Image (cartoon, rainbow over all chains, first blue to last red):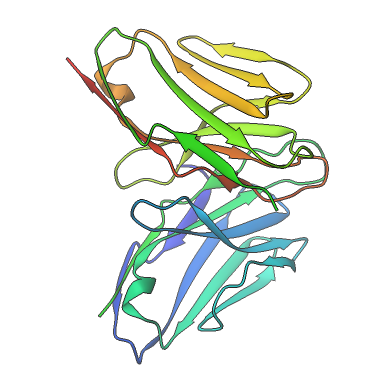
Length: 114
Length: 113
């Protein structure tokens, strides 16, 4: 176990559904990230939260909405997704600002949009 | 922003051979370069990293080299074993600025016995 837990592990949703992905880290880190992993593409950074403030949003469509209520929890709210949004969504955490930048990943949520 | 290119996309070797994966980065401000290994059904896990103040780092059968001038870094795995088969990702960031990791596309390594 890496100390980063993602739920659910698998999710199938229709294009009109609303669902949320959850990530929890038990490492005392101060930064959390959402990455999207599609076939034959690099890990794409979606959102960054550092000290509970969003610091980056790489032109992600508004149908993806992140929420970081505290430094240990991160959510990704999904609504009216498209089939091309099917992918593995990975959450990661790290400690920034003290020179130790190793990022720890969860096991991911495999999302299928039908 | 940072852009990381990784080659090759697939690599097949015989058990006992060496494997080399190469990455280039674009942002000269990047100073932290980790390598992650991802096994089927799992998230990526750090296997080795290097900062820009050193040129080489070794951990048993794994080594990473960095050429800051050319902006490229490489992963070397010696005496490969079947359990080394996985997808390997390189990444780059600026650890002092606390920027997020930007990843390469990954290399699928297959080690046959």
